[in-house]
Image 1 (cartoon, rainbow, N blue to C red):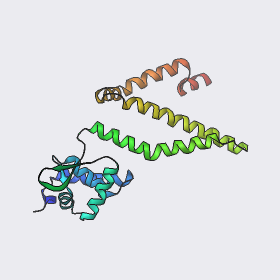
Image 2: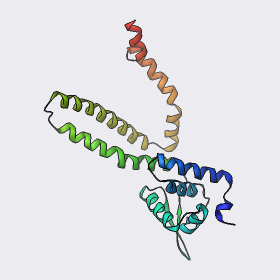
Image 3: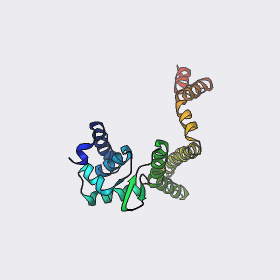
Length: 194
């Protein structure tokens, strides 16, 4: 009986799903499945255990673990008297979310902001470039504002951030009411036009 056979059906389903979702999130299926296995595991696993549990080659597991370490989604552990390297996923889901968001920001959003800043520093030579630059400024300003908000949320204690998320619908209703009262909402503008 292999370690793969020992995985409960619910675990196998979760691991398979993470593999499928991984390709949609920009990582390969193997990496997604390795992460899911480590996330569910009650104790750190070595590469051989991961390879056996998922029926992957040892080289695929090693490459997947390197990628997960680059994303800071797994930690390396050593145990006294054992020369093998063991890996574990952070236990705190808020920490996992924070790390993922920071890495996506570093890899995807910051290069876009940098490109937009460079484009906005150029002198437009034509009306088409002025129009394009204005659109880029709108995009830059929105992304910059979202990143400022994200930085503020990152400074909150996890419990406070979760409370803030739980207030989402209430805050949205208050802001919609404010917009209706000040005439800034689409509904208020439609009423004035009628």
